[in-house]
Amino acid sequence: MSPDRADNSTEEIAWVASRSAHTSDNPSQDGSSLRDGTRKTADSGKIPVMIHRAAATGFETAAADYESARPGYPADAVFWLVEQLRLGEGTTLVDLAAGTGKLTRLLAPLVGRTIAVEPVAAMRRKLHEVLPRATVREGTAESLPFEDGTIDAVTVAQAFHWFDAAAATREIGRVLRPEGRLALVWNRRDLSDPVQEAMEGILKPLRSDTPSYWTTSWREEVEGTGLLLVVAEKEIPFVHELDREGLVARIASISFVAALPAEEKQRALDAARELASGLEEPIALPHVCELFCLAAS
Image 1: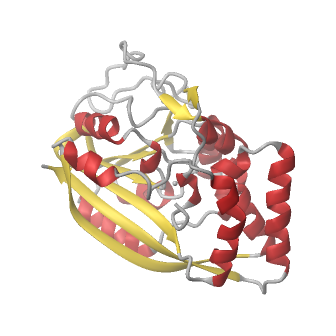
Image 2 (image 1 turned 45 degrees about the horizontal axis):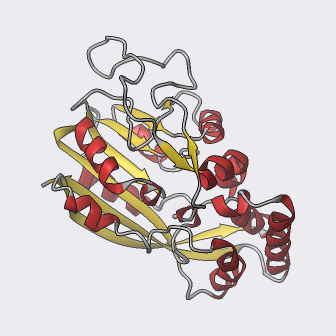
């Protein structure tokens, strides 16, 4: 998730099999199709999808910190998404890799139906706490629990770098309607800010050579499929404010920090606490929200 990208961009080179991508944490919502009222069955023989251990382990333990300390998205970003994705009362929207629903909660009131898809159980549980009436499904970008051509729009916030870009593009393209669109969103940390730079000093030694937004060529891989092309993009600066404990939780919410052995994790959090102790509250952390809209080529 790169030093100056949202920090869930990094993960260990290790794999954990996800559970079936076609189950739900809400039994009343599990197994329903989107449009025709028929019940969907379990996955029909797809290759099991794998997710990075840092995501499976880190986010399983850090969901509360993620919800409390990660930034949301500026209003101008929401307006841009509504315009570019052509969202409205008749839209069926999938928020993919929804996490705790940071973006889901902003878009759900603006469309006819929203389905949040998230592979990590703890994140789904936290999303249910925040949005108890939300439709939440277990799934991954490479194995979506939807019929062909049933989705009007897909959003992916803070997550596309986790995916097998080509496989995810094919799968998203499969479920989108012919005129459907995909939006990718990242909150980039502004490392020209002294506090962000100091936070990066804590994180960089822990990141190692794990994949990140900057080290993966998502745009080339996506457009290389010949299925989707970037048709619009925008950058929106904003500031995220935290108190001192919030800054510590922000560090704790990062997948590769949360997945550390206990002693190493404690050292990282102690360093974050020492940094925070010398700062005035509220602590202002500048970011840039980067947005990309993709449509069929």
